[in-house]
Length: 457
Image (cartoon, rainbow, N blue to C red):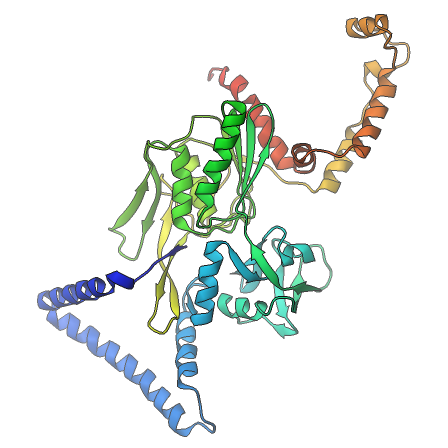
């Protein structure tokens, strides 16, 4: 989503629209007249109902409340990403894109008519309370979420810092709904998380696309390059990234592309397409890249993954992404409220629509929990020739014995297993041990040079 400001351009926009309407009217006055009459009748109906309520409703009513309600009802006929933002909500929206806001720290959407968590922000209140991606929120403080818009649901979840909200969630694997209490707090978004994978390799996780995401990413990669003299390979993790600002997705794509289309948008007029192109200046080196996506990678995440995939710049790995391929413009209205309006669809450089389709990875890789990985490791524990008592010694073992190292390979194997449990792992080792998809991505990066040596058959 890309914030849109009116301000100094307001008069110019009004004048331009007026000129276009005048020109259209001169060219086709009868059609314009019929359109205006139909629109007038529709507005007259709305005004008539409003006046009747104001005059005859059993109690006195707040006119602004009625108008706001009318706007919300009108927008509910459109897609779930088109919303009306009252003044307080618009202020909160602006603070979210700046990277700090109050609340629970979750990104939500409406999926199959049910309020669904796309992703909880790491270290935020919801994440600490145990809310997970994919959770379906069916109740908020004892009230059903059925029929709520995204804006209304968000409003119910927000509240005074330190207060508690109870979410009733449905989760795969649970036999009945589970109530989770979340204490509201200040959510600070660190959108770029970096891990040095050693030997020149880097891992970067993008949790969202905020105002400074591209700047922070460049800073991390420059520091890595300075430390290792180069970037030997890069993993960009977009899993559970719900998106954010369009311009940040474009800037980050441009870091790795020196030419070609990044993304195309097309609105109601399908003859008019707007494309964003990569520039050579500022492009980072041509090192191998693997991008991780999953079913909760949405919007700006899909734009970045699609741009790198279609330009053959990175290998996309993981699961098919969420499929939010629509563009929202935020228009500030006169009373401090705003309209978040879906105005176009996103298309990848090759012309693929992201909407409801998502990005299909080049390599499908399932993810496994730390518990599942541990079980798999135990199953893989097999005895080899070196573990059999009295086996024919290898040259390495003979040399070790000459140096006084007579430790049995089997004893060493068991000792290393015990030590690995007691020893505190580094962030890198912890990541590789507990995240199967990262492990596979890292393996592909390390094998990149070797694989390129094979000629096509």
